[in-house]
Length: 520
Image 1 (tube, rainbow, N blue to C red):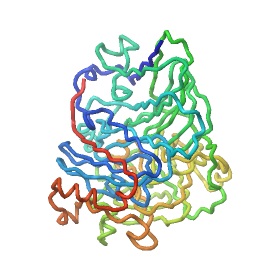
Image 2 (image 1 turned 120 degrees about the vertical axis):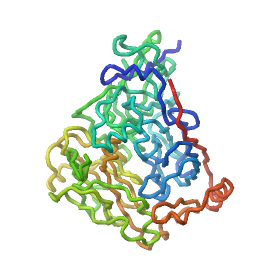
Image 3 (image 1 turned 90 degrees about the vertical axis):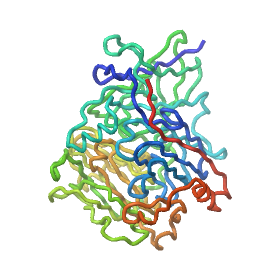
Image 4 (image 1 turned 30 degrees about the vertical axis):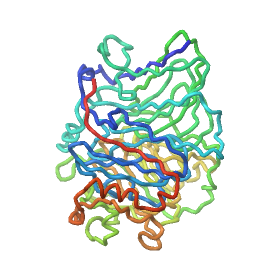
């Protein structure tokens, strides 16, 4: 007899009645969440994105480590936005990684309206996996939800207002199961996951919300943690686990309970958590502890600061403002004045300012990044293009003597980490991927208000020597907008098929059509 798992996403407060009404979301190929990109390690991937929104769009690939190719990263520092009605083809080769990732729109709080979908990178057949092949594969997107549109939320932040408390928690874009007749109105569509008794399923879980850390649990079942953002972990059983904004995990769950009963999947908010430290990595950590640190960046966030009359978020008292010309494009064309590589490597007491400022790093260097959280809520940070070893986290101010307490043997490698209130988290990263890479707060409101910086890893042999060359179909904007030719479908097809290295290898192709739709 089949059982079912009922997705009971617990609300922060009473679920707003308007959740049951029609709401506008960003759908991909008429799906919310979007379709799965199912690929394999080292494959070349081509994804054509058709922007049917009424505003510019970029898609970024959270956790995907592109080989020397920040041109395809899909963030404003590396790409010009895709104009409304246009399409653009991303082409990139996957690095030697496996696991559970997701894609989402990177501009203007659009992720608050959807536009996200799963990426599964499978291992090649010759590479063993440290667990038996599961009987099924299930993706869960969990996250907080506002009944106000992403445009309304964006306008609130532009006006210096806080967006306040979310209205609900969603699972796979659906409202809570009616676990409480007072809190949850009738008629809401909720998620049901069909399972078979005795079978084991791999649950890939992503927190794609705006700002809320969530605690995940499956009623009466253990969740065996096996992967975190591309790294297999020591397999430990949990009855629940905190998943912070932007983080991804895989669990194995065996359906070993009475099959005559349905069970809840619950995602509930955790405003201030005190657990969820780094998990060990059983595959080894490439001797990271014996590598000499070449640079240290201490990055401190603070409570919102008033800058030019606006409420802004900062790192080391700089609130990032994206220039109209992407940093990577400005470098290629030797444009001056677009941005500066003057970002302070340690906190300071200088007046807070808005700037287009990047961190200058060295290719083949070994970087220590310490995130210092001087706020009262959990922060999460993500670095594009890389995974890093999470070697330490604690409360209080970080000082160099804290290195003596680092995990020097089996730290986990991932691309997103939490930093607890009043505490710090230290990561180590090997700078083996040239380009300009986005380092950001994963909380959307913080990111939008300036809590980000770009890490510049220059090509030591000169631009476009070690790094992949600029794609033929690159878009132009800002100071280079006059170079942009009107788009035709014929020329776009030519540019996406022109590069011989792509046609010479196995190529995975997808078409993502992004549009605003209504759901109820």
